[in-house]
Image (cartoon, rainbow, N blue to C red; front, side, top):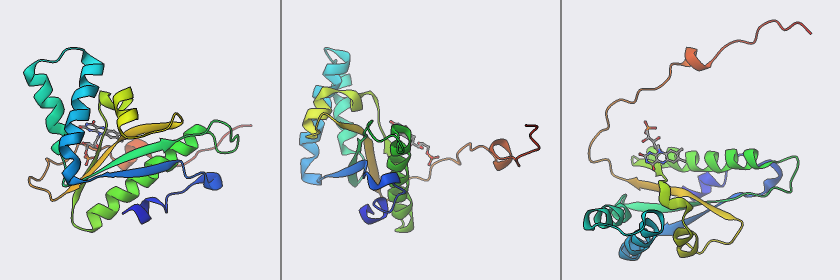
Length: 162
Ligand SMILES: Cc1cc2nc3c(=O)[nH]c(=O)nc-3n(C[C@H](O)[C@H](O)[C@H](O)COP(=O)(O)O)c2cc1C
């Protein structure tokens, strides 16, 4: 899956992404980190809020943190192009997971912006935490998604008067 991520389109070969596997024996440590992050965002937590923050650390049989490393000093590969590359890398992971027969999803949430997560994941100052890709066996088929139709987002270029 990570090989597929590394095949993402990448203008100027900046490699604006990296990925960190959360091992399953680290889930309690991750739950502790999520609790600290929730306190950073919401202040004092009720027992229920604490439980909800912690249980997210158990999601997905395989959990991979996605990190963007976005430079603003490359004029012909500006930040938005680098984020496109991060998104393409993520999509390659999702598609590869699907091809292996797994379900997968990217999730973020308000905790991704916390200094707790920044520090806890060991990110440097130029690195930004995007979210987690969760991969696992699908236990319940989701309802069909309400997706736009092709004709809603696709047109043929028309005549332009210059
Ligand atoms: C960067 C990013 C972050 C996301 N974060 C969340 C999230 O925190 N929670 C959530 O329910 N969906 C989140 N989503 C949406 C899901 O990944 C997914 O697209 C959505 O559940 C619909 O599933 P489907 O695309 O398979 O229909 C996020 C999507 C992106 C692109």
